[in-house]
Length: 413
Ligand SMILES: CSc1ccc(CNCCO)cc1
Image (cartoon, rainbow, N blue to C red; front, side):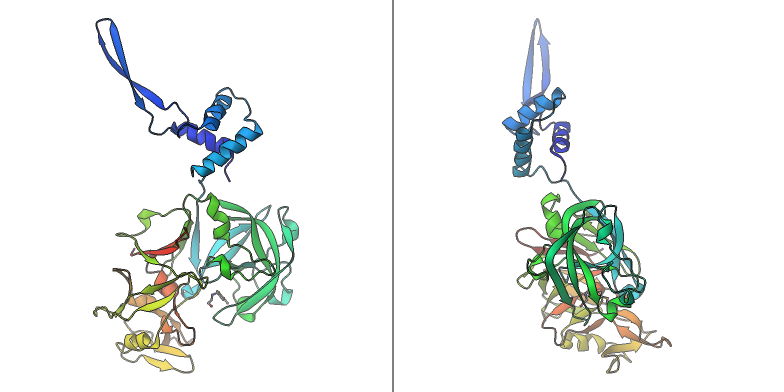
């Protein structure tokens, strides 16, 4: 939270604390008389006593008394003039864009870990000094005992399982967390005392940073807020954006929308957050240059899932267009020759459309021979809803709007 003095100085600089009447326009001298017209200072932050009083203290370099400072801080908040913070951080793809990792600094002095920002879950958990050594194979660990700002959340525990069968659990600390210049104090940092083998195998992944809704955070007995929810009060705008890319680094921004990062305009669509996810309904889809099929697809925007998982009927329609594509039961998914030129897949968002280029849908070879490749579009069978994972999201600039009525914005890029 910027200091009151900082914010006041900022207001003063913008002229918001200046007189309501400013920039007198010098009249014309006629004979001996001179008329001076005064104009209203549109930037004046209104008639607020505390600002006027504080201005006098600032003008004469006197310290602003505590209660005046508190009155000013309250006024700044009421006027929404206290929001200044934003953040921006790179998102680097692991091999085959399986996941995207971003540097996150935790504690004092900073301990920087590479975390997977996951809009499909709501726990910030890390490999730590409490993770069994046998389960740590290359990861960087967070050591709370080396952070002067770490506080043990006494009696708190967490335990999470993910859709891909992986899991982790442990104890909880609160500490300062900084992402791309945006620092938030007292964020719940969940220390892993157990991790499943899938996480041990991901040497470059030091933990997850959940960006779904805090209602599905797993900390007990007292549920904790996500980093985004903790950051919201100081953000310019209650949003974060995901700009993931095919085979190269993308970006997560917090608190603002970079209008230079996308083409055309953003199309917003309603979110059902009742299950804690960024769930929305796409009104239709198309394969290649085909016409839009008005089969709607309801799913979650999930940066922590690699693939696009949709209803089997949609999957069949897509792979029917590809000669030599087949369902390989040993891989539990559709595969095709790696040399195949794949059709695009389009998903509608409101009245607009996001086109996933065919090459994004060649996920990875299924064997070292590299002859057969695994599709980036697979079935959502058994999940209960679809998942717009990285294969879908990296074709768009996505706004996660966490205001009073959460919504998602999509634009092509
Ligand atoms: C083992 S690497 C890993 C990365 C992200 C996640 C969270 N989302 C997955 C979809 O269930 C789980 C495991």
